[in-house]
Image (cartoon, rainbow, N blue to C red; front, side, top):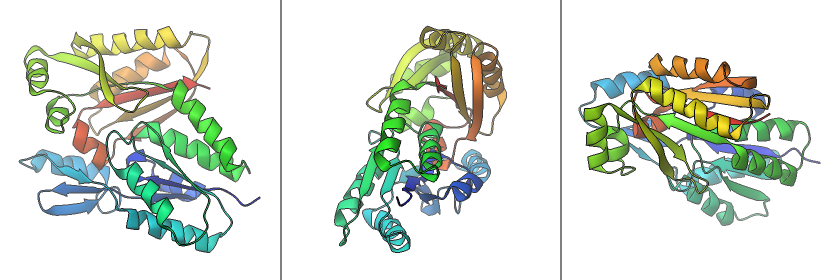
Length: 285
């Protein structure tokens, strides 16, 4: 059986060394500061992005890859391993046209190809954990259908919550209303957000202050995961570590954490949520 090839996009926020080790192909989105364009995680790394974000007078925008960019990757993989199935795992279709670009590219090839395009319905390590698991299973010789079944299970069982330092970025991107952003800023109200099963950002609760928000997240996760349940936890945060470290401590001391990972939110995701964002993704081990 020919090993399944794994493709993702840059919003999965998988470090380059892990992509290289597991043979994961990555198609970058673009980040634009005015007319200045960068390739996410290639010509603009996370640390440089957040430095630039502070200096920039406006808000950056982002742009999805074209179908042609995905076709180049698919064609190269088919040249290397003509009989290999390809599994392409991407940012929520509710956030971006990246998934649609990949899907369209898979239908435009002029040769026979076994390509499945998977909507993660998530972002950052919510995608990355699926991609890494898929790549590990591919190396172990699992079939495309076996991998799809596993990442579908992980997607359905994952609970995720995130906090933002400011609602300005989500408001400018059309994710929340202007009035909500203004009230949140004035009253120090911290909305607890999630990504619902369809891949849409949804408010779950709102409390005043980061400490109460972190405790509320722990309480909500306890409703899903008993203390004895072995779990895997993935944290994603920006370059600002304040509440991120508090959340990490609260989670690891409250659950039977069997494995954990920490991801820095990359430029594209950071452009939409802003500095100071922290997220937790949890699923059973």
